Length: 351
Image (cartoon, rainbow, N blue to C red):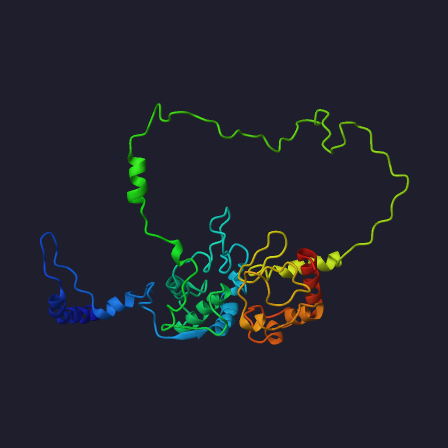
């Protein structure tokens, strides 16, 4: 009862103040509520706009961002934004948006850097959202920009440099015009007869990959001409040819190691430049000469050839071997891994 009496007294004292702040009544209303205070509006106004409005003061560089990203984000997104399991890929994907399997990343798809900053700051890292400081967020976003070949490794992102770099796909979006372009088209009366002057067959369906039922009906599925007799055995078995090229076991190990590189590099048939250059023919090539790729000045001016020894040293310590290059990868663990990687590069991409 004592608590109730104290509460009643407090409410009675506060009543005049509340009454003064109550909004005036209006037609059809009840006279409830009040105007929001500036501090209350500011507490909810936390979005970041494409022009940078709403950004807090702060800054972060690429290499600080790399350390934070490895600690906070790599469990889901990989050390280089290549994605782990079914988590989103954050780097690469350039030139894929018009294909059957588009890869939508920060670099290939997102039109505004403000969306990246706002999402990272408010929703990441997974399970601990909102724990990043403004400086941490600037650094992580700077690293994501670096992974997507938008900035050099000495770039510092801040509220003052936020608009210095344009997103690669900034011009890939336009205002929704379906109400003026598509709606009239699909709102018209449909044509039900005599809709075209003439009909012309331009293509015909084809049946592909038809598997015979039962025992094959006498069709020789092996391409031997339809007979059932076995091919005559060779009079003498020729000796097995000596394997050419790198050890297959070493190549397989290198292929497994290359998965950590595949977010930035391609190799093999149809390989193209991505975040990093295509690696076909890298062994024995001159460094920094892949056509169509923009190398860092440090690597383009290195003046070295990717001999077996140089490539092994670079794979073990990319930044130490060529100081100032843009390679984000920290390096393989030991010489055995470097040997396996070079064997795979030789096998998949040629000498």
